[in-house]
Image (cartoon, rainbow, N blue to C red):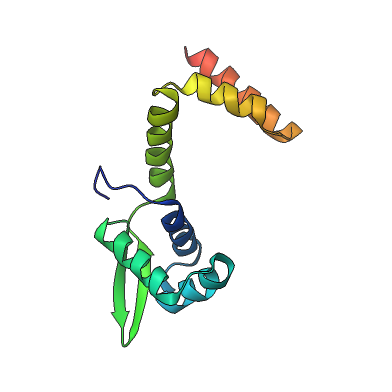
Length: 126
């Protein structure tokens, strides 16, 4: 995906569907996303086309069907979106973002334990 290309909120839904079901027919993406989002088939096909242009997806033709696959791993897209969010909202600093999320999120005991483990691990590496 081009460095400047970003994935919109709606396109994230399409990408998540492709990651979950790939290779996936365009009609299956439409069936999964149209009704809950009140999108038309044309809207979803436009998003698929945009994601191909952004080099986030690729497709193969199988007769009249288009089968879509992700070119980008989900983790790579998450890292890029996270970095963009940190830059825009928190001036690129992770600590204020993390503190905000911890203060304002309901975390389970398991999530808190994992967070403590990650922080302890990070502290040991410092």
